[in-house]
Image: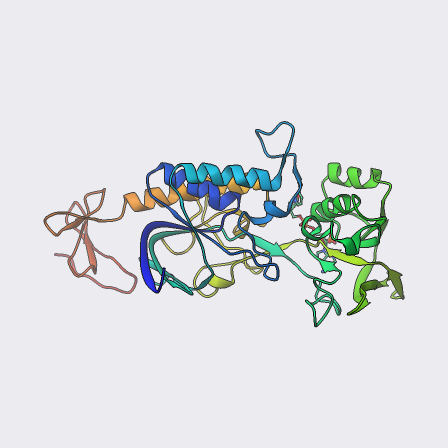
Length: 367
Ligand code: NDP
């Protein structure tokens, strides 16, 4: 795609459960969706398939009584989307212009123009923002600090070593449990004396003899040397006293933030950056732009709910397209409701003859 413009009715950004479900539904509706994947990038934590690609056992996705591995599940989603004709493209989108339809997406190699946009860009791991956590060479990120046990846990640097997991949610319990396959011991450092992880995940971790908990404690700094990588953490007790705890690796598991930077200033978001959708739909504040999955869900954040909203957004996009004016052989543009669009596109004439503006700020007179 050398600086060409691709035109589509439906473009989906993101290939996690939400994006791929939107693709399955819109491809089956013969809308020929184009799904844009971010290329694999370890630093930006992007990988086609989304967060399930870095998960192990998925035990709660309906339809898999014996559980399934995250990457295997995503492979099935993808095959199903391909089967109905979804077109896939790997590209970094540098900028989007949602000010008018068709919407424009600018990548390094060209422009994509689309009548509807389904945003399924998901969420990325959050960081503590403490000294020593940044990527090499500024800290030990990639040299003993990670936010993905499944990706990095099996590395030789962590085998038979003492590791620290930070957090008290399901992610922290899952990461800690997974790391016990390789580590000598895993210490979960949590800032409170209560977890927010689900009961079943907590119990699994409590039962694991290789896991111990350090409660009411914050990690203040990650310590180490460029040669050895991480050698310890500086922990702070509730009384404010600091001490050094020796370990060979730190896995930060304190939740996720939505990937919405691309849409700042154009789409409505909450204080954290989750896209706002209206009522029982996936509609954003811009007609024709829909959001599904973790990028708009700060409450449920499950693969199955992401897939559910992906389905909703495909149906929403299909209905939206159905109601757009279609050019008639006569040159007229007519909607499914029998509305006529004026040649200058400034007004719509309703079936009962009323004239209404076709864009914000346009004033039209009755005929
Ligand atoms: P959560 O928001 O549930 O938990 C984040 C944890 O990190 C909390 O314990 C929080 O502490 C702690 N934390 C947050 N910020 C900081 C900080 N700056 N310093 C220290 N600690 C901090 O996120 P999760 O990623 O764990 O889970 C998100 C969702 O994904 C949940 O709905 C969960 O059920 C789901 N999930 C399900 C899995 C499964 O079923 N297999 C696996 C993983 C996630 P505090 O409690 O004090 O706020």
